[in-house]
Image 1 (cartoon, rainbow, N blue to C red):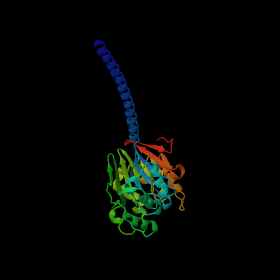
Image 2: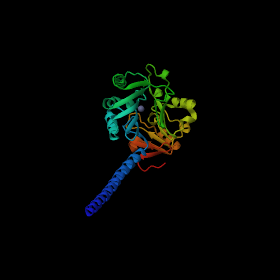
Image 3: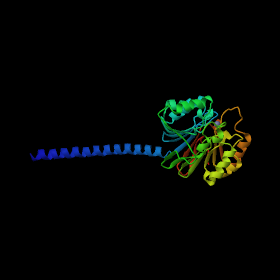
Image 4: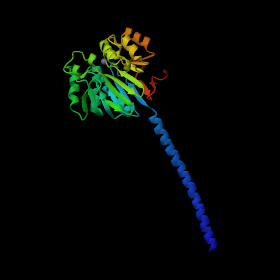
Length: 307
Ligand SMILES: [Zn+2]
């Protein structure tokens, strides 16, 4: 009897030790999986906030994204670029956009918008309220009131996008100036200031020099930004020396492609290169991707450019 009890105790102890070994091994496995998962998740969240200046030929399409979350799209290029923008968003894992900003009604900004609205969920469309009688502008108006999205006419001082550590403020135009039909929408196009921590990105749409002067008067020092999108595809109408002196951008993005107007203007490019250490043209380098950690902003694409 005693021998049987002793044998049973020894067997149980052996099993228990075996179980402990099993448990330890399982714990190790679980720990390793959890560690890998945490590492993967944390390295992803370290990716930071990204600004994508998508190469769409002539026109603008700028995506603000974080970890595959579509925070905002600013314009969507020409109609024929709509699919390209959509595919780009999907390549980033984006199936919905919280915000869509439509800076003005010219084809090279608004043309691709219907394709985006047809294909992915959009939370709210921010626009200037301008109406025009050309086809893409009329098509946009039809879309504006037919979907599940909200729509909102912006005004100076609005901050339509606000979330942890990121805001997008409307610097121009005044709501009252865009009511009804304006002959040329460019001076009234939407100027946005994105702030991510201490990083500032100025998106100037297609404004001209007169509006740049107004912005200097209105905001002064506040315009100082690490990154600026050159206004009006770096035509000779904007990017004045005074404006560049005020903004002092370290990186300037020129969103441009083949066009009949000869953009960018050589003298404007000259001025940009004189004032700014890094000037990137989307027709030469393709899509530009910048990544901000809230303190600094780095160039992810094209590769190999330090600043
Ligand atoms: Zn344009």
